Image (cartoon, rainbow, N blue to C red; front, side):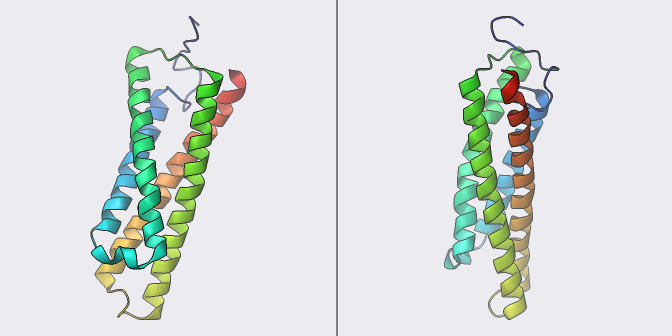
Length: 159
């Protein structure tokens, strides 16, 4: 190791590796898809759970894109100075956004299920289908975010 640079194969999946780049790319794609599926309809604002999902995905997307760029730089330059404070900030950000994403996905899925069970007049089939797709994409984004959080948690003690 030179000057705090770690080789990418030492800690697969942790911040600065190609696996982390793939996790961030997937997280960006799924959170963007969730936001787009929800925003295709202008009536999403009438339900608090749907507004919550839009807000959380609006936070996840810039976080993921920023770390995607940093991971991409690290993969191509093959060196990223890993500092304990930086990894702790990324770990905490991932953990907080992971919890928020899970809460938003669960609330969206449950409200959509409730609307489908209540009556078709509240939510036509094609509209509820979009809401279900949005919730599914949010669950996939949460899964990748929590995986990234765990990988960075495992990285932290080795610094």
